[in-house]
Amino acid sequence: MAQNISRRLSRRGFLAASAAVIGSQAIGQTNNSTEIEGDISQSVRRNISSFRTLEWQPYFANLDRGAILVDIQSRALHFWSADESIYRLYPTSVPLSDDLTRLGKTEVVQKVVGPEWRPTPAMRERNPEWPEYIGPGPENPLGTHALYLSWQYYRIHGTHDTRKIGRRSSNGCIGLYNEHIAELFGMTEIGTQVLLI
Image (cartoon, rainbow, N blue to C red; front, side):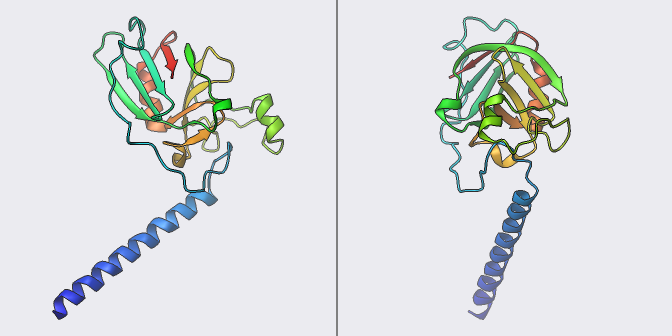
């Protein structure tokens, strides 16, 4: 019995220590955040329940130049290569609200490694304290790579703030972990079709 109590105490101690370590990492992340688009430190439910694979046929007539489907509700990005040999499914961040969300068909018109960031006029109006420009690097909200879409100001890009993925946390763009956008960047081309639903 003494041995069982000892095991319980050491297990409790382990759990308490683990919670303390996790909590300290979260605090550190908040203090060193590159968050520009808004405070997401409040508890926000991530949407993983509907994170599932999909077929491309209900959404695209063909896979010419590949296809990207972004499902705002499930917060997932699906990619199919033109020859159907590659399928990828990535968790994403999505726009904060419906008024910032744009749905429909567009395409990749530019690919940039180490993108620069400038807030849109609407962002500057809402947040005049934001900087007018952030160059490439760890402070840049666009992460390491960006796919520019035919819609002005809309991009699929990386983020250095990994807390944003799986949440409604952007001003309209679709965010991916930097390692995921780097992989997607390598598989897409100018003209890759994109559909946001």
